[in-house]
Image (cartoon, rainbow, N blue to C red; front, side, top):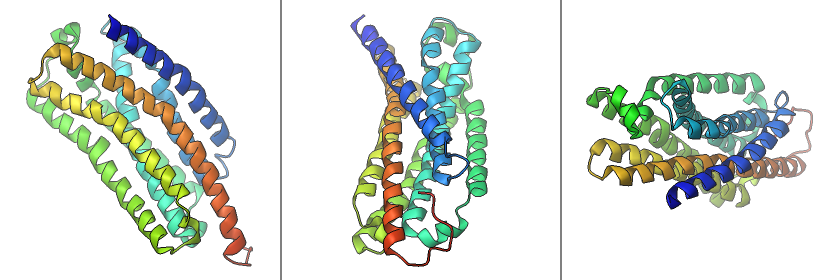
Length: 285
């Protein structure tokens, strides 16, 4: 009973914190989404978090009944996982290009290009979420779900492996590569935009926020299909892992807003110290 109350309290805190924060990011980024590439990244990332957190009450209600509401909630969870990983990867690469190659970004980093990338990532996320959302119905050990849902064991294990690779491990590797380059370039002082350690601190805080919050989710998926640990223990672990994923949607807006402000200041410094030729188009950061 104590654990149930604790979970409900954590869910309420996540909901009451995440909805206002992500709504604010949506509003701030939305005011500039037609003018800046950064606003488009931030707006879509906040949209993914907002959609995820707003369905939290529906997920809690649907635990008592196996119907279309539960299936929708499972699909939203998968959509958020994939879209968050893909958008965070794109955002990290974009930050790396902006910091390391400001001249290239000034000429080639355009809104139509960013819009096309964002639409492609959403389509890819939706495709994966529709393909594997039914697995959560099997992996969350509700008796009434197990009674009607009996997928092939080989398909479940293969899908869990693919979900982990595509939604976690591969994006992590793709994010660490540009981040490592930024750290190396900052040490070598190759660019005035990345001499300060402040943007590195922001990136190094943003990256583990997502991956550490979602790591237990994937771990308990693997434990669930292994049939090694007792079912009650797995139920508790899965419940806390799911709550932890919602808290990632509360922390992300703080990092995004801080990052936006920092990069806008770096752009102003670079424009003042880099060159006296101001005839070209400005970066939007």
